[in-house]
Length: 319
Ligand code: GTP
Ligand code: MG
Image (cartoon, rainbow, N blue to C red; front, side):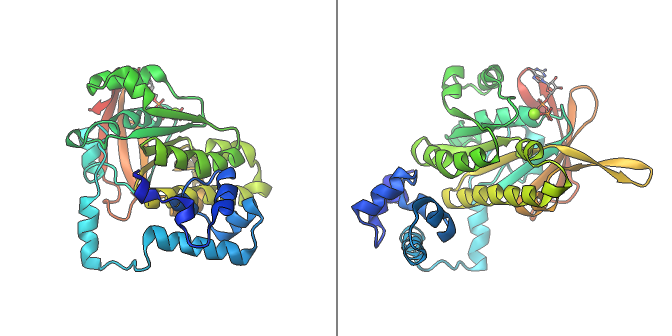
């Protein structure tokens, strides 16, 4: 991020040195960062009056996004086409995704254990570092590891395959460990934004989004609360994706749903995840090291279209 695209807090109308200092002490680093917050959130962390919180947030949004924001439908096609696609490094998967991952969107990869979710995340942590002409965006990755599944060795082998210095590849992956749902919220709202603004992070991986929530909010009686908290974190990820133009990838576990005499596997997280995520995919085992990826739900990709890939010592590859 260049300085001019993030703006200093004091450039916001109504924010003087004292308020800027207060906001900084709470972890808000720029006017763009501030513009992500809702009045309620700002009041909660600063004890500001509601009037004042609303006023400075409105001014922050106006500074960062301008006051006229309508775009003609005819211009949207061009805007979508010009968004840089991020390669997965697997041709068939890129094709399924319509040319790679798009920024400003969230991707969910759900599947049983061993279907390649974590492998795919490791590969993206490397491909995001590739230059534009090789399908990357020359960026770094923030890897939120909730399952203790991050493997530096795997990043190294994948980096070698793509011609990136393994040490350099690892230096461009910021691994974030989280303890519980509240900690995840703080890491996303503050640490992640700092990494995006100051360390060129372009891709956020959460492997997995659901593990913490399943462990923390157990039982039927806490389901509503779990879904609310899940919705909250997904909303924050979407705000960051849109405002900073970054790629968001989430992995998800599956649940068994009885259907007559048989059980079918569905992604965990229920309706909340289904509504909040932009593009959803289901990963299945085929044979040996071969996996199938299927479009589960997407506003722009064909329902049930599939791609196959293989998990090898070099990462994930075309089958
Ligand atoms: P869960 O996190 O358990 O839900 O599974 P996942 O979908 O994240 O599975 P993951 O991506 O970890 O894929 C595991 C599969 O990748 C297993 O079949 C492993 O054998 C394979 N795998 C992992 N590392 C390597 C490797 O270095 N070489 C090869 N050839 N295969 C590997
Ligand atoms: Mg995994």
